[in-house]
Amino acid sequence: MIPISLCIITKNEEKNLDRCLSCIKDYPFEIVVVDTGSTDHTVEIAKKYTDNVYHFDWINDFAAARNFSISKASNDWILVLDADEFTYELDLEEIYHLIEQHPTGIGRLLRSSEDIIHSVTIDRVERLFNRNVYHYERPIHEQVLPIDKKTKLYTYPIPLATEHAGYMGTREDINKKAMRNLEILLASEKDYPDAYTYYQIGQSYFIMSDWEKARIYFEKGLSFPLAPESEFVQLMVVNFGYSLLHVNRLEDAVKFFEEIYSYFDFYADFVFLMGYIYMKSGNYMKSALNFIKATTLSCFHVEGANSFLAYYHLGIVYEMIGNAEMALMFYEKAGDYPKAVEQVLRLKKTPE
Image (tube, rainbow, N blue to C red; front, side, top):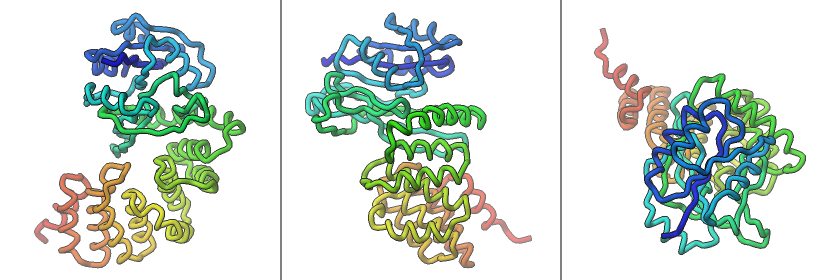
C-alpha cells in the first residue's frame, strides 16, 4: 500500500464538508484540513473526521494555502479535493498501480459540475502527485507545476470521479464567487500576463454575464501561441464564440471560427458551436452538418454537446426549413431532454 494524504483547504464550507469527507472516509488516506478563517461550523465538522486540522491566515493566495496544507501531510503522495467535491467512484488498487507506473506524473480525476441552469460540464483536473516533484503556483485557479523547472510535466487519468457543487446556488452566490476570483486575478495579472490568466479573467466575466469584457479577455488569451489539445484553450475558444454571439458580432464569429475550424474539429463543443453559429446566420445546411458531426465525437466538456443538445438543435434547424417530419425524428433522438420532449409533444399533438 502506498501511503496517500488527502489535503483540503476550507472556508465556510459547513454545507459541503460533511458530505465531502463522508464520501472518502473509508479509504486509507490521511486527512489534512486547512481552514482559512471560517466563521461557521466548518472546523468542527473537519474534526469529526481527522485530528489534522490547521489554520492558515488568508492572504488572497490559494496556492499558498494549498502548499501549506501539503506541508502538514505525513506522506509524500498527495491527493487534493475541494470541500464541494463529492467522490462517487474510486478504484484504489488501480490508483496504486498508476502511481507505480507514473512516479513523476500528475493524476487527473474526473469531475462533473452542474451549474444553476442545470448544464453539466465534465472535465479532468490535476489532483494526485508527489510533493517532492510538484507544488502549487498562482494565487487563484492555482496550478500543479514542477518544483524543478527542468522536470517535464505530464498527466494521466485516474479512476476517481467526483460531483462538483461549486457552480450551484443562487445567481447572487455565483456572482459573489466570480467577483472574489476576479479581484485576485486582476491583482495577479501583472505577474502572470499569459493566456491562462486572461482565460480565467474572461471566465469570471462570462459567469457574471458581462459578455463584452469576457470577449475582450478571451481575445487577449487567444493572441498567444496555443495548443488545441489543452482543455483551457478548448474552453476559452468556445466561450469566446458565445461571447461574440451575445454582443451581436455574428459575422466576426463566422470568420474567426471558420479560420480555426481544422484545429478544433475533434472537439464536440466546438463543432456544436459551429452548428449554432451557422444556424444563427441562416446557413442551415452547414448548421445541420455540424450538429450531426458533433454527435460522432467523443471529446467534449458540456454534457449533451455530442448527443441530446445536438439532436435538439437539429430538430430546430429542420423546423426552420419546414421539415416537421425530420424535426420530430431528431427531437425524439434527444431522448428525455426536457426541451426536446416539449417539442415532440407539440408536433405530435392532434390539430384542433
